[in-house]
Length: 239
Image (cartoon, rainbow, N blue to C red; front, side):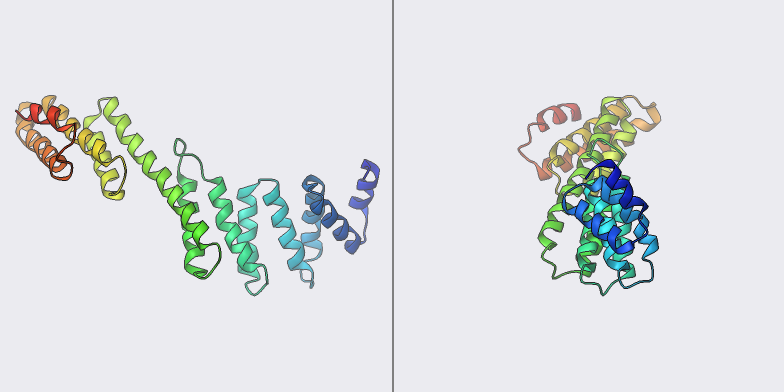
């Protein structure tokens, strides 16, 4: 369709005609053309029998344009406003999925990752028989993996920058929150090493207690990983 024809659609007062054309644009993957029309029709059809269909198209057009934050907001509003609609369950899943898609990699701020986990868990809790449950569990595992990696990398960075007290605290948090982490052995080693470094650099009055803490951390590693390659170094430090 030419630019002039598209402008005619935008200017038309015939709502059914505009809706029909918007759906055609949507089906043709011309989401940039469909979006302004659906955006207008959401308000114009409010309170009518067609409002739900228009609103779902509107949210889906945002989703197809990869505006996941806004799409997630409208999908959530859709299923809360129209809980008995045939597409309410789909909207609930897409809400969670939009949050998942918007969640950043582990190297960035993880605030949205927590939001995604909460939304996915909400969907799992409210739709236990959904066909999407297995996929949701995969998303949850991936997101928790990102948080786990982020937690460990922050702790490791404290150690590398010689902030040994902060490193011990952060490593303890990682080990507590993610007990099955694949970084567990290395994290326990770094915690013990950080404890020794902290003790060495402490004033005399604090050294005894901190060396005891370092030995305890070494013993914890030895108890769980008795064949760890890190033990030789740590046991040498103990002596």
